[in-house]
Amino acid sequence: MIDLSVIITSRNEEFLKRTVEGVLEAREANTNVIINLDGKWADPKLVDHKDVIILYHNKSIGQRAGLNQAIRLSKAKYIMKLDAHCIVDKGFDKVLIESAEKLGDKVTQVPRQYNLHAFDWKCKKCGNQWYQSPTPTKCYMPGENRKENPECDSKEFERIVIWKPRFHRKSDHYRFDSDLHFQYWGSLGKRPGFEGDITETMSLLGACFFMSRKRYWELGGSEESWGSWGNQGTEISCKSYLSGGRLVTNRKTWFAHLFRTQGGDFGFPYPQSGNQVENARKKSREFFKDGSWDKAVRPLSWLIEKFYPIPGWSDKDIINIGGNMPKTKGIIFYTDNKLNIKMAKKIKTNLVKVAKGLKIVSCSLKPIDLGKNITLPLKRGWITMNKQILEALKALDTDIVFFCEHDVMYHKSHFDFTPQNMSKYYYNTNVYKVRATDGHALRVDDCRQLSGMVCDRKLAIKHYEKRLKMLESYKGDKFDNYVRKIGFEPGTHNRPEQVDDCKSEGFESRRPNVDIRHGGNATATRWSPEQFRNKKFTEGWVETKDIPGWGRFEDFFGLIE
Image (cartoon, rainbow, N blue to C red; front, side):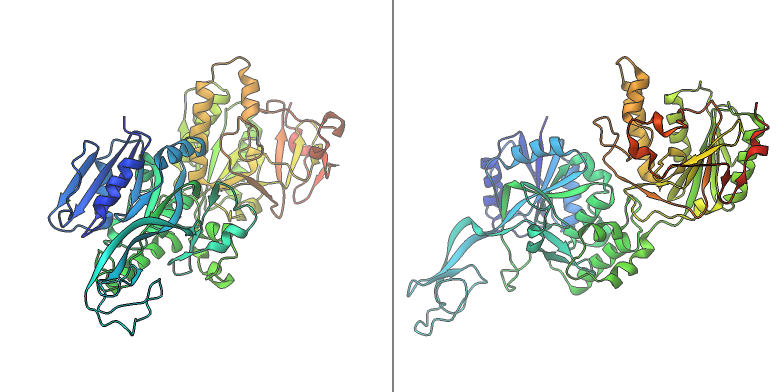
């Protein structure tokens, strides 16, 4: 098995041979190199090595297409895109792989970046030597500023290869502006929370990034419709974050990159017209600002909010990407068909009335007449309940999902809520628990129940797919205890058994929902503050028989034995 494939796309790259040899010398893991030669054979000729794979195109297909084709040849667990004019740190692959195993599959890594001092020019007549630049036509003074030497009229110069990192010119943090154009962001490293060996960065330089090969294809690879080249840093960074993952700079290792922005014969190897650049930016805006990327579980506004304030972004810019928020809403309803028939009928009738216009998918153990019904011939239990939820989530086709249960009366204001962060779970904490036998009700300040959860549907699907696998693979004793350690409400605890690390937030509808406690509920109810060891769960304790917006429930619950 190959651990890592370093993918290099090359077009007229004079330093390709040095880059490839440097990777082979620096590697410490089972790493190979896959090169896409895009329209021209390498000059100087590449090393003949068993761990170097060459993909040649006699006509240029573009950097994005070449990158995708080269990665298709890889059999490695991880891939790292690298420009053809770079130096890598000794053991770079081992560091990145070990970090990936700890960080998880959803984290894209970028090594710390240094500038690469590739060569100097030297005057054959006076011996002056100055920093890399286009081929000179006159003699310059020593150093980087390229001040003309008035005392020398030489026209003959030679290039002196230096090939070493400039360790005083490093970059760890990057961003993009409101036009989604790449920018450096060194000041981000001065903010609290952005220190340490692993630090988040808003964007990246397209010269180098590392992720699992599986993850690369989950993100859709490189978008070839965007054009040959350009905006790749924005593409990879937005895909990493908006898919539910992260992007980090790994300061434990580095790469050094040669910048060729001076024009002439020292410019970009891929011809790039203004129209091509604008096309790439237009496509990135469509994907991320307008929200057309179908793999997103977070809007771009989430990413801006995460790093705000950001140079190049204003409050007005954030408002203008508000259209990126999902708008379609739907309901999943799940039941074990054990509820009192009269109560069940009242609750279903109420739900259809107050959720008018919203799609409903119900999943039951016996057929019911509610929205699109899915029937699972299973016995009631924790695994069954999670299967019902997952089946309903997958059958629904809206952006936002409201979780609705068979023993809760929902107020129409509950469905007015719209999540603002697609990586969070939201809970309607305006809920009263009502005892079915006598209509006695209680309320506390921050009651987060699954029956009041609202979130991004894709986020919920991923959560319940993983939750179900955890439950089905559990081999220990005391299964019910394990279920409670996992928790019923996503995002409400930090125990090691948590399904994911997404957070939750509460909201209050204008009028409350009513959770009916009838004796057959999945979880028990404590009717006295003295029953709670942790008193934070009793904050705002209120007992009543008159619920705002609903009135007294005694007559309704008198129907129940």
